[in-house]
Image (cartoon, rainbow, N blue to C red; front, side):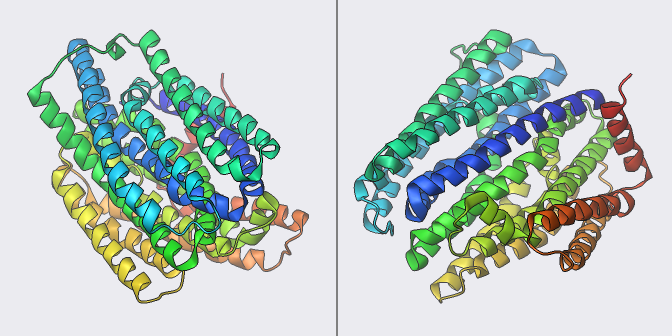
Length: 506
C-alpha cells in the first residue's frame, strides 16, 4: 500500500519551499522589470527563457531517470541501481552536448539575423544567449542527481537548495541598481549562470554524501542504454513540443509586436510557473509512490493515486487561479507597479491553459511508470504539433496577439481524450468510467467556481480591502465546490484524514 504519511510529509516540505520561493520570486520579478525595463526583460524572456523552458525539459527528463531509479529502489536491487544511475549520467552528457551543438548553430543564426531586440545592443543579446546555453549544459547534467533525490523521497534537500537559489538571486538583483544601465542585462544573465552552476554542484555533492549509488562508475550497458535512451527520448518529446508551443509563439509574436510582448509573456509565465510549482508539489510527492506501486503490481492502488493526485493538483491550482484571473489587473499593479502592455490578457489565458492541463497532471506519471510509452508519446505529441502548425498559420495571416493562447487552451482540453485512449492501451485493469468521472467532476467544479466567483467579484471594487474579502469568499466557496462535487466519498475521507493528520497530530 502507498505510504500516505510519507506523501503528506513530502508535500508539506515542498509547500514550505513553494511559499518562500513564491514570495521571493514575486519581489525579484518586480525588481528585474524596474532595473532592466520592459525591453530588457522582453529580450531575456525570449532568449534566456530558453533556459527556463529547458528547465521544463529538465523536469521531464528527470521524471524519466526518476522512473528507473524509483523502479529499482522498489525492487531493492542496489547493484543494478548503481549501474542505472551511472548510465543516466552517460546519457545526459550526450544529450547536453547534442543540444548545445544545435543551439550554437541554429540559435546564433536566428539571434543575429532575425530576432527583434529593439534598442538593446546585439552584444548584450549574445551574452544572454551564451550564458543561457552554458546554464543549460549544467541543468541537464544535474538531472540524474535531482532524480535520485526525488526517487529517494529526500525532499528537504531539494526544497532547501531551491530556497537558497532564490535568496541568492534576490541579493544579486538588488545590486543591479548600482550598475550602469547598458550593462545590467548582461550582468543579470551572468549572475543567473553563476547561481545555476553553484546550485547544481550542491545537488551533486549532497547526493554523493547521502547515497552510495550516486558515485559514478565507468560502465556501458547496451541493453540498459537502449531502454534508458529510448524512454528518456520519448519522455523528453512532449517537453520539446511544449517548448515549440510556448517559445515558438513567443518568437513568432516577437516578429510582429517586438520585445514588449515578450516581456508580457515572461511575466505571465512567471506568475503561471509560481502557481504551477505550488500545485505540482502534490504530483512530485505522489510520483514515487505511483511508480513503486506499478513496480509491485499494485495497479488498483496506483489508479487511486494518480486520479487523486490529479484532482488535488487541479483543485489547488483552481483555488489560486480563479481570483487571479478575475482580479488580474489589480494583482499585476500591486506586484509590478508599471504593467507592460498585453500582460493582463496573456497571463489570464496562460492560467486557463495550465488549469485545464492540471486535470490530468498525474496521468503522465502513471503511463511512464509502466515503461510502455512509445505509442502514447507519438500520438499525443503529434496532435500538439498539428496544433502548433495551426497557430503558425494564424499568426502568419495576422491574427490578434491573444488568439494563439486561446487555441492552446482548446487543444489542452481536447488532448485529454487522447490521453485516456492511450492510457487504456497501456494500463492494466484501468477503469475508464472511474477516470472519465473524475475529469467530468473537475470540469463541472471549474465551471461552477468561475461562474460563482465572477458573480461575487461584481460586488467588489479593486480596493485592497474589497479584493482581500473577494479572495477569501471565492476560496471558501470554491473549496466547498471541490469537496462536495469534485470528490467521491472515499476521496473525501482520504482528504479529511490527511488534514486531520496535519493539524491534529497525536
